[in-house]
Image (cartoon, rainbow, N blue to C red; front, side, top):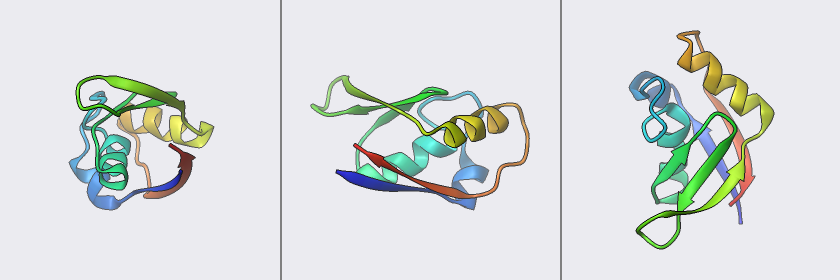
Length: 85
């Protein structure tokens, strides 16, 4: 299913650098999917059965770049992306 993930200014303010369950992309993805996620620099993993991460999907290159910039303390503007999750 194609899902739009909107990383908002609030996500960027409340997100935690280097925390794969609390970074801005994770916050936005949890809101979009209604589930728990684990975000690495190049992938996003979703909990499907309530107990473990069972599906991993590659992130678009520009999203990976924004994650790196955010983790390095650089300014990142709100952004959106679509994924087939």
